[in-house]
Length: 358
Image 1 (tube, one colour):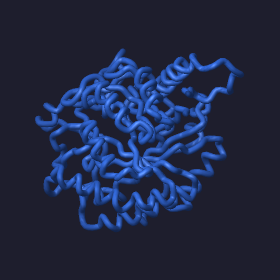
Image 2: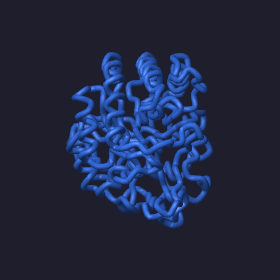
Image 3: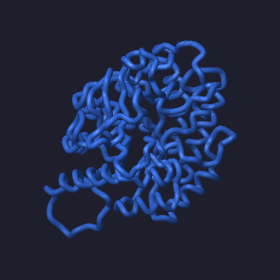
Image 4: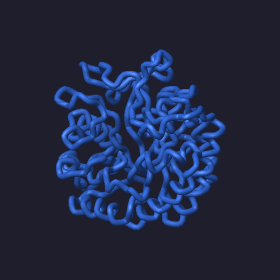
């Protein structure tokens, strides 16, 4: 079993990103809603996915996974609105096309109003810029959605948790048979922030370890359903305790990990550097390894350090090749290499960007 690192959250892939990955000693990349063709047909075509795959192959980088189709292709599915069946059919086409080019992990979320923060430039260690959330500020009307909704995606009426659970079941019932047929795993991202209160008029349902277990049950044991374990989001629930619960519950069903840290739990938290927040990174990696997890870890939501662009969340190539991301990858490489010291002695392998084997 092997845990590896991948360069995560890439939307714009270019020569700088490829160079950055190689300089960090990484052999794979993971994409977040990549800026492929506009997708007027509502799905990612075989042509554009093959072009992306060919470009990464030419650069000597594997595609470890992709997460989140464009919101325009998915929002009616999340909300259970007229037109969702057409979006589901297009999603099934995307699954088939991913499989055809050898991409076998597709992350998704049911955050119908997406990620919320109340401060996008809070001060972290040494003045680094981080994001923060305070539910009291939401009630005061000061919340900032981390992602943008178009006017036609505005919430016309509240959507209850019961309806969101039904929408998720409807989605799984429609897409899992296709994913199983072609060998693609769908990985759910928990709700960030995991508030029991609705945000933006729509209930959040994946807000606790028990709720994540319920999602697993909805999938009916399908080998094509799994979890994108966002450590930041899950530790926003109840710190390392909730992280441990989810790892113990799902283990091999965890497809990959968003390795980020936060200080505090709902209703108030702020993001931070790895190792200064809610959980011990080495302890979490050991637990993942013992659970049977054999996927990959990515850097996620890193603090913006001096010299990085001022705007958090800008994933252009200039911003992506950043000090904050290099720090996170280097930290994880050190932890993985340190945890490998008890392996039997043998020939020294070529560097692979950090790896824990058992």
